[in-house]
Length: 254
Image (tube, rainbow, N blue to C red; front, top):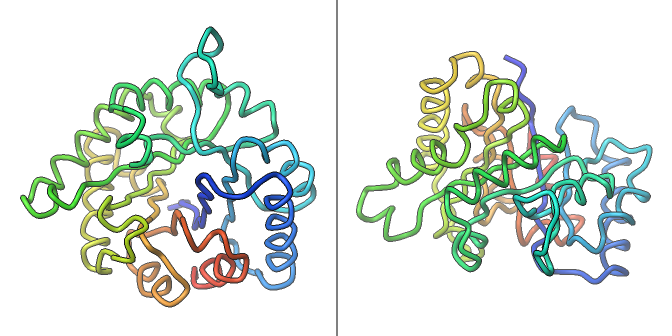
């Protein structure tokens, strides 16, 4: 089993260019001084900060990702950014299928599939988000919902392409709400995701796939969540905007 421990920060629509550079510099310094583990650290600032972030992170082990990409390589899509453009900034990762993209911008399973395919083709690693709403959790359809997101959004990739995918389980009802899935709820879904991957690909591929938890992860609950067998790290929202909190979450990963 070679799956990586990963903590990724999704900054969402926060931080100007100047503020982004300051936060990256602060995170870079604390990571250099305090992190001795083999946990992979990734930051996903806004598009405007990607070229500057590449320069600031040069010579470090911190990875860089974008928060989204378009599924076409180029064209008349005003305001959009292609996977190739993301790659050209020096970024290595891109988040696809975040619940906010699904909820506010109409990213269906079909669209996320096209984005994932484009990103992998351009040489990026995909952080692919899945998760259920509160209504779906309450009506007990959450396994079906997440399975459909995986099947329709990811399973068009062949085995080699899928090796470039990190899955992130984010219960929509726990994003930015202060609510967190219990460690048992999170572990149950992570184990289920791994089983679905094994069924479609192989047990070995499933065992090698990193599955992250996202949804109000903070320094005080990170260790309990990360201690679960099938939770390989976190996709961090609000806490990623504070260098100290973000690095403390990284330190909770063993």
